Image (cartoon, rainbow, N blue to C red; front, side, top):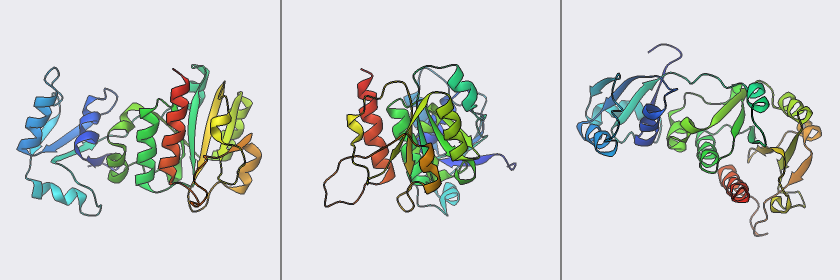
Length: 245
């Protein structure tokens, strides 16, 4: 395995990687049962064509999950990273864009869950800080359940400068903060928008406030302090997707 290649595990992460024409799958390790499952569930296409396939027992595959509390389900693949997306090119070639942006969110499970929700509810892309993004995390891939193959992820060096740039390109930036007085569902969400979420522990950086146009919140029962980041994002993404219909 070269430095740039890495392993992912799990039925949906591996299967969706095989389905993605932009993803290079170098090797795949399967149990006899998982191979049968792939062939049975994908009868119209040979997902294993041009891929080196090795058969292993479940116990042999366990070593790929030894350090994470996740299940391989009989599927392990060695893959190459996807080509990096250009945010500048994307926003100039598309209209009425909704982007989500994560600041100080580092937990791979949370990031994977946000990716899954963003893809499920047709958010146009996710902005992450490159140095905090766990690009080769098996846990993140497993939490995304293959959705990472279906969404644009823009890795940037600095969140603040990126927000500044997007505002100059006629984007509205909405920062989600439970101390805000305005519920997000009261916004009409017209035009190009950035949905900015901070971590549960640190929230949004104070220096970021000058790049935020509006602070909004999700109204929840007042006895509960806040929602998990992935739950918050899913609620917001579902609401915005409903407005498109």
